[in-house]
Amino acid sequence: MNFRNYLTDKSASVGITFGAWCVILLFFGAFRTSAEEIVIISVIYFLAAFGRLLYEYFRKRRFYNDLVARSGQLDQKYLLSEMLETPDFFEGKLIHEALREACASMCEQVADYRRVSEEFREYIELWVHEVKLPLASLMLMSHNNPATDERYTEQLHRIDGYIENVLFYARSENAEKDYLIKEVSLQRALVNTALRCRSELLQHRVNLRSEIPDVNVTTDGKWLEYILGQLMGNSLKYLSPDREPEICVYTEIFPDKIILHFRDNGIGIPAADLPRIFDKSFTGENGRIYAKSTGMGLYIVQNLCLRLGHSIRAESVQGQFTDIVITFGRDTLTRIE
Amino acid sequence: MSKIYIVEDDAALCRELSELLQDAGYQTQSLTDFANARENIVASGADLILLDINIPHGNGELLLKQIRRECDTPVIMVTSRTSEADEVLSMSYGADDYITKPYHPAILLLRISAVLKRSKGQPGQPVKSTYRGLTISLAKGSLSDGTQEFIFTKNEMIIFSLLLDNRGRIVTRDQIMTALWDNNEFVNDNALTVNISRLRAKLAECGLENAIETRKKQGYILL
Image (cartoon, rainbow over the protein chains, first blue to last red):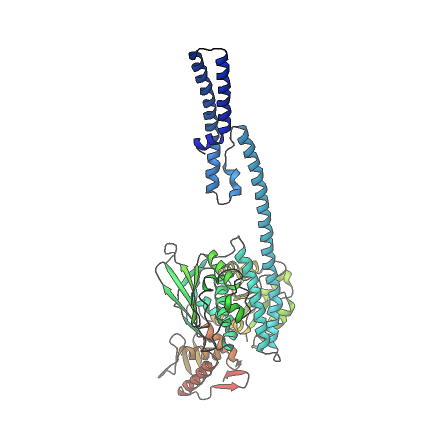
């Protein structure tokens, strides 16, 4: 709010002041008032009018400018009333009170939804733990019983994969910090993932090559294993029929970062689809033609990476390869040698 | 024969787990009285404890902390909680390993045998083992009869030590494969067959003809 806006806003009031002055002039004319008296009275009249305008301007300016500035700075605008001082003029008090009430009710709503979503996530976690018990029993039964074969275990692994998706979707969407960041061996994370996907990799005759040196990255180990599992699942889904399938996992190490490449020689991604593969529910050409795709896997993966502070991107040439590249930051200051 | 104590309140899972472990040549006992869990576990004199986190009358992590005050029997946490925080907490309370449900049976067996082997050896010193008069050095990857040293490849050593740990029992291809993959060697079926025949040839060089026997559709056994 500057004086010009203020004056524009008050143009009607200024107009009325001038109108009243014209009427007064008419009266002065009628009563044959002397020129000096007219000048003196007009000066007093205009000083009073202008003075009032200025007084009002300075009184309101502080409150409104504060309001605009704070509102611009705030990330969550509904916390605005907390930041403002109570103004000393009546209109301001009304606005401040209304704003305070609106903000309080918004805070309540936000807290409500946050609680509901947190409870939902907690229930999902609980449910996942519950459903994993019979699943674990079934896997053991299928292993202990010589009559059942690999096909049973395979289907159980699929169920396990879908259950993990729900769990990590809930985790990735939730605002609460439910990960734990520490030094994790990249090699170990890949080995654990590979062990879990082993039967599928072998069944599709995929050659898994790991060229990861013995390095640690700062991340949540469980989340990283899920991410690697998703990438492996994708590679397995989009194998190229023309050549011997291969997945190669390797790293580039810099002083300030570690870059992990997860590269397969599958069918690749069409260039037009490439920028959108991390979008929610995006299935693309490959998803429609080759496999049942929900468009959620890479979306969850990207979400998890963002929350852990890793960047993720994809490179691909259709018909040749797909390379998912994850960059882990390296904080040299906090590492205790 | 090592005795494994199972703390798992899901009856079906507990039964299957016992069967798996018994088939693998372990003696098992499982906890039924969860109200006095600590006393029962400590009194059992088991060589290894499989401990769930979600148990009646308390929490596995706290139970672990209590057990650790009284004995240092190795403990593997077996749980459906896949969170890093739970794993870090368990390890800080003194767990030897942490496995999440549902697990691949071969992985569970591998972890159990690794933890048992570690707990039997002296801390900080590699486990010294011998086979028919030959001394095995895992660090060097070699077998020695005192006069001559036979160098084994990494894969051959992994397979041989797994067979040796389970000497006299059948080791399935699945178990061997799991052990190799666990050591960052992602071999396929054919490569496994090649590795085993190379190991056989190498053992023959050491004067151990027919040390490994094939059991059709079951696996291999080191005599």
